Length: 439
Image 1 (cartoon, one colour):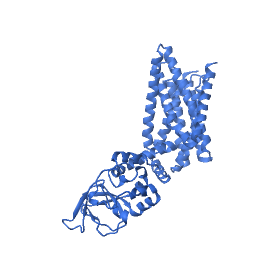
Image 2: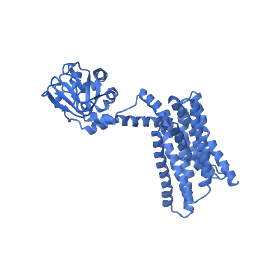
Image 3: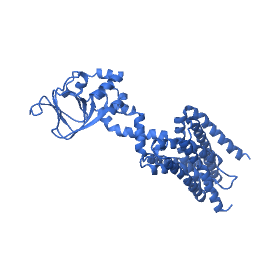
Image 4: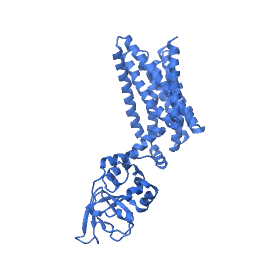
């Protein structure tokens, strides 16, 4: 077989291997599907890939090095370095693309992305609440409902928020700036009781006893406030016995001028509060739609990133039809079906049209063709150290894909049952490798 014909055949192998992505997209768009069978198929593919990487890449590469005079330890270190480098490169590339919107392809990646986004969006508020003595009387793992009720208000220097005797409407926390607490009318020169800065809460007595405002609040400079409406706070207390009990422990007689830090350690409180955040369905839906807008290129690059390493190896390993990387091809082909089906379902929820989804997944076919051809042309059919290292590099990226996307998605969609097809895929691929080597 000439080099040009081998190049063409390697390209066709890449096309065949990745064609399953369009099959999966069609299932996700047009056929009602049960998540558990697809999850089991994905798990089976993951097991097959693990077996193929261990035998066809790692072991064969080490054997090739051993035949060139390298010791077992040196060969292991060489192959391990390649795998580790490939995994690291894949990891950072995938994280970068997911932040750009590629996370909407898969359920688990999007949930991880969405939670990270929520943590980032709320971290500043949580840090502020952790420095607020009043809020730290509340259990940190119950803080999420309060975060959802927090509004914002800005005051210009000298602006009065409320006056003594006004009806109470909310609890306020100073986010930035300062406010003055005045005894009566804001015009009294000697009426100042206290100056409250970032982290201080005021107006809490209105939430506890329902009385009128006992002081006047005036901005000392440009000020940003967080506000929890009285109705929201009462609703939270009524619906949560733990929160109600925590409110009862707050001293009803504490004077607003004596607010200060203390009690529960602020850093620990903030850490527990951040760790207790979760996504509700409404938040997830809004973020999914928002993130997907303009994320087409990131999704394309994410799909290509998942495709290139495996097809590089398939092309590199191809020398003749009697020497195909069947286990690797099988794992990638089978894995492409549920991956694309789940992804198509996610992209539909994100607002993508069917034509656009087919277009996004069609890029996988082109990437597979080009990657397989490149593998054959540049790193195939040679025992040079650079070629062996390049194959190990690609193998590490595939293994990272298995751990980062395939197994997590399978677990999320199929539950603990997927451990069985994972092992089954591994054993099936092992059988294929042994049958070939024992001929």
